[in-house]
Image (cartoon, rainbow, N blue to C red; front, side, top):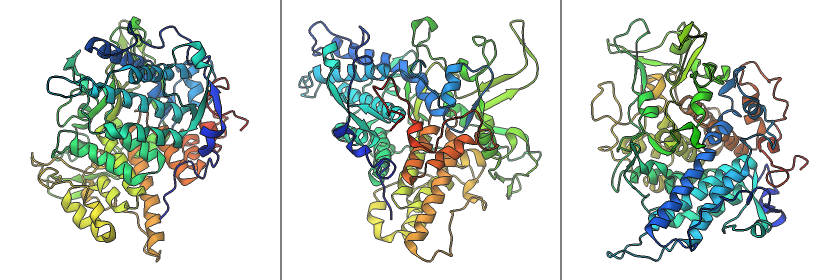
Length: 591
């Protein structure tokens, strides 16, 4: 079994980056007077100081919210741009992001990092209340998570970045030489940094603007899962994702995937009537109930003039603000992938049948694309203005930017389990969902030597009830593929990839791992399209496989007809995947 870390073969020099490369950060780290939010005495030892500074960090998070989505989506294979898109967006999509592009501003990331460093250096974590409990530990852990998440975004976009863990409070401080670190080093550092705080509850200040404030924070177990997944620590990644799922609602609790889906009505014999409980649950609900899909979001300003108002609604949708001219559409590659899926229908007569091949548009294949995006080429009039094309992305209808949600955690759990050597376990997450019965019957018999470790993933049958055709109210667990493709647990066309002609057991498992990984990549596209994850998902697999073409071929083919003429960058060179800024951050293109 091969367990390769992501940089060891593509960038053999990357492990030495912290030792061999250094950078002074003047020019982008300390170029604004409000980089650090100070208190009068530069110490945080009161409720007012601590909470005010924490709010300041969250305010600065708003400055990178839009680019978190756009940099991750426009460079992938699931969206294309309309003629209305700005030059800045087009440069992102074409991998031609210069220092003048407003989405290429490392100072915005370091403003967050520097404020986190200031908070962590100055907060008095020794203070206790009358119950002898630490007063500020929840906030301290939350800031650790903000810093780790921001560094992960930074290094995924720039490839190597200055690692700065102490506050920079003067121009002289910024002129120090800081070590330049790659993805592996950043992940290793912040895994060690946040592990001690994984069990600490996130802060909670009640409802803010009708939104539960707990949604503003990054759960450390999810973040540890991501860091370990990028670092190639697949068992640790799986353990952390599971730990989040099993503790999200308290100890001895459950956080099942739910049976929400987009499906044809059981009584519909004409393949026209849809029932959609997926889009409303996934994108419109910004509450934190035990069954909520949303995990983390960056709250946005409600007033455009405030400066950090998200532009995503006006970039994705046709709105009055953009004169009813949207900038983004689903790519032909996504349309083709969605249409290629085999939908399994359960009829009113009690039969399982495949949807007919002659269905067209949003009714063909997986139904999630049509539930996430709708367009009408008819003529409309809005405020007296003639509009020929009207498009709606349901994933961008609020002012807040969603970052983590439940399906994402389950998909990454599947990815980690697959690469840890358990493709059958991973596949069950896609096909029918998991509980202890599934693990005992469909997983452990094939990996008996690792049964003890596999059983640490405890999904009690009474808490994780698999979906059946009976549709009982107690059912709360289904396969991810069922969210858009009907009853996947009963779908004979959706089966575990295998090749019985491969006689060597390890070679056969390696074959399954690669094929299941491709199913996971497809499922990530079907479930998470437009949410800013795609480019990084492709990057992670390409690095893991030491195969840059895995990413390049998909991105070039986003129009569905082979290599795109308008992407001049050679994406088979991994260095081209990263931005750089004035020689201060990122890779020099000559390297």
